[in-house]
Image (cartoon, one colour):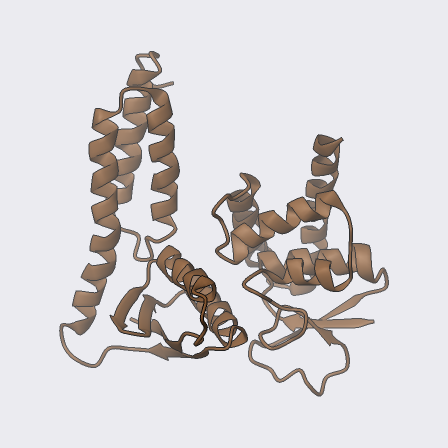
Length: 139
Length: 151
């Protein structure tokens, strides 16, 4: 399936794409469109685009929305959800300590590559690493 | 200089929970309220993104919001606005410096350090004062942790 989002991905779009690829659709391919492009007539599922089903909902980040929409039950994903939410959606009454660091790294990543596919590729490794370490810490 | 301006109307609801959620986010962003329901921030990738989602959230909650990229047209207006943003963070930075001088233990300093980093997320114009605050906190931490010289 093709998944569509705005180009120049940041923390929520990288982590959401990772969540899709690893837990929702292993064959997921990603298409990046210019910010503000009308995606209604494009074939594919839009995410992290204002107005899309898979975007910020109830004041929480897109990662949280995907987690809920696809009923993914995993304590580590719940932890990551809170990290992304604090980084991206100003929800940080109790911010996890990883939030600020991950935000800086994933924001900066796109400025290193300037190609969203490459950014995602590297972003996925970072997210895999985060997942693996949190999984170990949870055990 | 470019600015982003959010014009909004909060949802009419009996409970205040929805409104409070929005107000809290506006406060956290350190916006300048120009009028009731009109607020502004210096334009950046980050401020724009936060405003975009906030506008969506307000609409989703049953309110109304429009978002604009804008520039000032009256002489002096922009300078006032810049001063507002700088003073907003500088006031807090000065409080942190004062509290750091009075801090009696490392725990108090660590709390100030967290507060300092929260203020920095609202420091949209990057006030030069932040370097001083950082220096004071580090210096005081060196003294209180009994290491004498900074390592």
